[in-house]
Length: 123
Image (cartoon, rainbow, N blue to C red):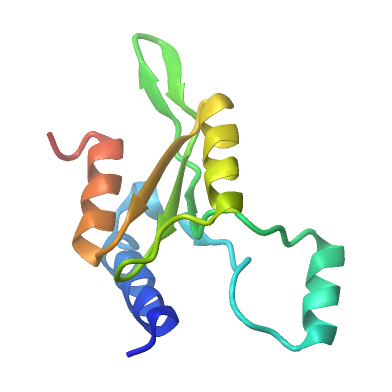
């Protein structure tokens, strides 16, 4: 199985497992990666597609003592020995400075657990 196919399987599994949770109603993919025809790639770049943005975003605010702890969570899905690209590392640093929770996961279970922990459904 190719790495992209494995990342697709993991990401789809995460969505499938979390979609029933009311907090995850707006959990969504950000399709910035992947190989595309040049014409499509140019069009998407004009529309704002940007390398480095993580794969999934959960727009769920986490509060602590009446203050926002995190305004949302970004998740990057990896497979095998794959690691964050320089652009993904740069985005992670930027997003964390803006107050977002950012995680990188390598399995469906890791992704589900990260979201459950973020939502306070798991200790």
